Length: 384
Image (cartoon, rainbow, N blue to C red; front, side, top):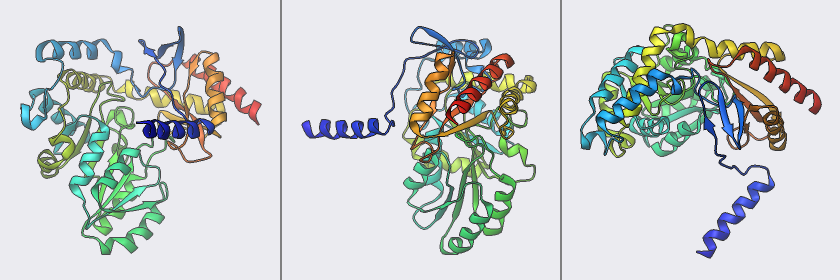
């Protein structure tokens, strides 16, 4: 297979030349916001465990008990091996959190989006996708065979123009967006998108992976817009809920269709019992401690105030530096000062917008947030 190795080597060399090659670095997470890498302890600002629940004693105990009682794995598809009762419990809780009739749990958020979208739209349909939507939304759209129309990021006017032109030509229309955008931390105008979709008989789908658990007392970005109709509310269990998996909350009819036709559910092994139990325990904590859900955004706003940046809308704050080399150098400098803030480079973000993506969680100490802000300010000043 010399040609295969040559192909891979050439691709890697080209990426390396542009500072775009990626490396997996062994890193152990500890309680709180501390990680261990290369024998050093760092304060991590690169983790999506926004509430610190993946290490919470109740969550870990629930996961361990489920593994001991039910086994380590699910063994097969939910339709083949039988549906574990814990999954039904989790779906009821998610639907209650999101205010929908029902929910469907998938093996991951990526599997949710790549399963839901092709189940609902096909070659006779059109899907409108926000330019900065997550990669798995784009993947689901491409798998669907529908016509894909990109609209400018959070630009309701651009979407309205495109709907006017394209909607009459299609059988069905889907508008897909992130609720909280994972690399910029801004929030989609779901109320305006909802109204626009209603006028054009389009179905609105929002990916709330980075909103659930941290906005509106944990209910997520949709709850910031009372009255907005969002029939398809997708999210993950792997971020603020501290576990693993994905879900779609919607009407009973939609969920019933997904459970019989979504390929990433029908042909994929179900979620392990430990992950399911962990997510249930996290939902218990969120219900009991709504004040915990407000902390990540509060830490992010402390950071943006200190740096004079626009006020954070979510626990994610981008510090855009431009080139991949600049972002890598800044990340390395911060690591030397005891912070883990990973550089984000194309194609994850557009060319020329490589950045530090700073993610805040409930367990960050204010003094560490301030120290990081001052370190970032010094780096920005040095590069000016």
